[in-house]
Amino acid sequence: MKILVVGGGGREHTIIRKLKENPAVETIYALPGNGGIAADAVCVPIGAKDIDGMVRFAEEEKIDYAVVAPDDPLALGAVDALNAVGVPCFGPDKKAAVIESSKVFSKNLMKKYGIPTAAYEVFTSAEEALAYVKTCKIPVVIKADGLALGKGVIIAMSREEAVSAVESMMLEHAFGDSGSRIVIEEFLEGPEVSVLSFTDGKTLVPMVSSMDHKRALDGDKGLNTGGMGTIAPNPFYTKEVAAECMEKIFLPTIRAMAAEGRPFKGCLYFGLMLTRQGPKVIEYNCRFGDPETQVVLPLLKSDLLTVMQAVTNETLAQTKVEFSEEACCCVVMASHGYPGSYEKGFPITIPAELQEKVYVAGASLQDGRLVTSGGRVLGVTAAADTLREAVDAAYANVGKIHFDGAMYRHDIGHRALEV
Ligand code: AMP
Ligand code: GLY
Image (cartoon, rainbow, N blue to C red):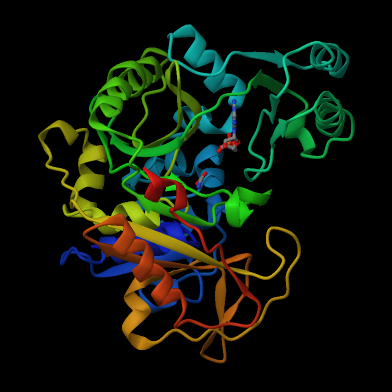
């Protein structure tokens, strides 16, 4: 089989490694892939948002199956376009991807179907939003409606911060068009859990739970990033919590999407907060999380391609999806300065015996050498019987890898280890 994977980060590298375990897979093409992915797939210089380019390529190469991993192409209708030329895909169509690409859509969906989430108001007028934040409860959370690379969320700890967040989104257009409509919502407190799930629109199978570490610096300080490290499973997510989420959140969500004429097929990601009033949805993503995938898929014992095809063919109910009982940790090694500006082009050394434990995100090949080319450069992982051992092993691996300016958090898993 010839498989196409759209995307070029650590998440895609993890997906590709897992797909390769199936002996029926002959060639994987990554669009555009990266310098590290090049060791596992054929990288093709077509951007993840170039829908016409990817459709042309899929037709020319007679691609048998495609996996569209990032949010942008999904929101742009990559799955619809590939399906239209007969290529079966893993990923939601454009109508279903809106669950991530519009926060207003997802908040209204949750309200309509009684799915627990933070209380909220939607604003299209800066004047009304400013009047609201002058009297609302503080802290308060302000979110731009559209996709804003994870940066469109501001947790305002003071009224002044809330006012300036509204001003920067609605008057100064800090996030472009995605800030012309904003959601202002109640501040929730409690441990955060990420649950990725496979769903074919009717059946939903949760994957092992995980925890992301979004802030750049130790102790959850510094700026928000795409994610600096992950652990799985998440110890806050007990069997009881899982059962409650299935009943009150997961199944109601896929039923709601079907009822809206937007059946969701692919990986549906639930960003949850376990509040004193029970689990609530912080956000939905219409795709695998990054770097959650780097700790979740290594624990998948079943064949990934088989499960993905069951999602596409709507036969998930008859398909076994098994996870290992082990724990896994991923430490992200980033470029000095990330998430702000950083230098690129530093050579990366990874000992041969660690290659399989490293998922490459922001690196390219220069004269055959792997060099840094992005903010998040590598996801260094380890799996073990206990979380403590997995964390220690991941850090031992980090210690053997080098590039100039490498920056990473030293406390990935700290909260989970206290449970
Ligand atoms: P998002 O981009 O929606 O995942 O938000 C980024 C981060 O902001 C989340 O991972 C949470 O830590 C935090 N956050 C978002 N919404 C809320 C909320 N209503 N209350 C508290 N924290 C929130
Ligand atoms: N790590 C969070 C995300 O992928 O959105």
